[in-house]
Amino acid sequence: MTAETPHVLVVDDEADLRELLVITLGRMKLKATAAENLASAKEKLSSGNFDLCLTDMNLGDGTGMELLQFISRHCPDMPAAVITAYGNMETATEAMKFGAYDFISKPVALDRLRQLIEDGLGISGTEEHSDEEDNLIGDAPAMKALKAQVRKLARSQAPIYISGESGSGKERIARLIHSLGPRRERPFVAVNCGAIPSELMESEFFGHRKGAFTGAVEDRKGLFREADGGTLFLDEVADLPLHMQVKLLRAIQEKSVRPVGEAKEFQVNLRILCATHKDLSREMSEGRFRQDLFYRLNVIEAHVPPLRERQEDIPSLVDHILTRLSRAWDITVPTVSTAAMKSLCHYAFPGNVRELENTLERALTLCDGVVIDKEHLRLQETSPVAAPPSGPWNETSQQVERPPQLPLEEFLQEIEKTEILKALDATHWNRTAAAKKLGMTFRSLRYRLKKLELDRDDEGNE
Ligand SMILES: Nc1ncnc2c1ncn2[C@@H]1O[C@H](COP(=O)(O)OP(=O)(O)OP(=O)(O)O)[C@@H](O)[C@H]1O
Image (tube, rainbow, N blue to C red):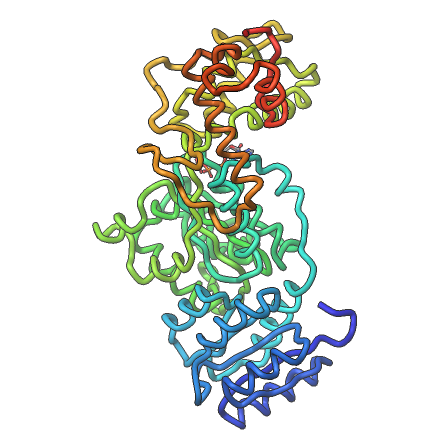
């Protein structure tokens, strides 16, 4: 966003609404320009410098969706929001998939409009950095793609469904989305839906008045209001009982909650992120998860790949986790022997990163404090890797296309890494034999291992 007065483009074919929006924006001390159809909006966007666009869906000569597509191609850094017909959630959902950061329904409520504009201007402009990002380890192609997706999603207000196996890092992704977005200064509230007893759920989510039921000794705000202005992360959302799913849907749609034993409703403004290790569409088709809630929450899906599909990330994760544990325990970071690292890189980790953390914590207690060796890991030998490391080649050795967001240099590095790891694997990490297999000198392989940060340990296993 520029340091000057933010400039908003309003696009609507109805003159009355257009005027109302321009007046409201003026009162908010913003500069507003109006366009009455798609062609004029495109022309203004091409010649002017806007910080935000607010568009209706019917534009006479085109649709709001077409304008969103134009924006994502020509001004991808400018946030855009849409105005939808009352109750038309499908259009709103579709618009968010097309890149709108939020929507507002007609008749336009002015306080909601103000909020929408403020949120939008908060995300406009320079890229944010978050410490959470540094703590999200992973350079495997799938993780790089996920990080790029997260950066984009952080700007939007769309609900996101984070899928992935247990322990793969879903909550971490949710925190990152929050910390990179306009709500970062507000609370991030995480709740494990599977851990709340069914009878307490309503009061946990929506709060209660003192005396509303036995045990309600004081007023309680509830998670929705605690997260007001910020993000509510519903972990294990598939575990919500059906009666609670109805109430949750209502709260999300109405953007308001009524505490147990309270007569009045409270407005809430929050972003909902959810996750589950279960297959949510299957839960829905088998009648355990409401279809309407599914479509409301699952506007955009972000998938966290299991650790066995990004084994090249294991060495840096090991490094990161051991550094963190050693700092907490106030000890020197131990080294990991080549044999131990090799078994870690070949283990399937059904419990994903959490299992890796537990494995290393145990190894740290069992080792002599200097070197973690294979026997300290106590990995189940019966759990071999289910899939080969995800590299630029798939299981049938067919070439995989370069993900568009991955620069060529890094893509080529991935190929190099995968091939080197394959050769090391085939030769039981005998680097002389691996170099021969790869048609290079030992020195050249050693240089590449260093460059690719695969030379964790120099124990002279040549
Ligand atoms: N990419 C990563 N880099 C560093 N640490 C990670 C990463 N992914 C996960 N972790 C760590 O692994 C542990 C499990 O992650 P997290 O709780 O986010 O997983 P989850 O998928 O939400 O698990 P569950 O399904 O059990 O709720 C956490 O301690 C988290 O900090």
